[in-house]
Amino acid sequence: MLKEIDIGHGNSGAINIERATMILSESISTAKTNQKIVAVKIIHGHGSGALKRAVRSFLLKERGRFRAIVFGENYTAFNKDAVQIYNAIKESNPGFQDRDFRNGNSGMTIILL
Image (tube, one colour):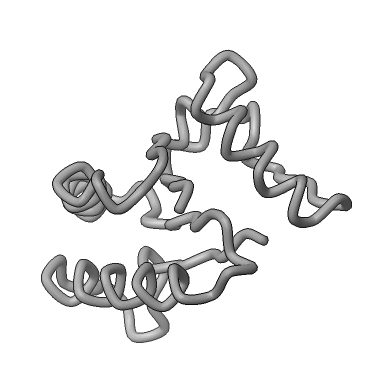
């Protein structure tokens, strides 16, 4: 199963980077305790790019916690990690379709737990 975390489109407007990384860390920790969740899609949006850079930097620093990290623009059939993530989600949810796969959406990042 895929869990989506949207930290780029808060109801109260812009979110500061420190708060976003705290939410991200907590959400990933919670997802890791649920054996049904195999991957997490983080929607950070495009905006100025500051949140995207912060999210990706955080994930890269924490990379030992994940089996794979794929930036949205690389989430295609030509990236072995992207295919591994997509197949893991599809295996846990046979009807799964992801509109971001093959579309180069740089406003998201996906990780395999």
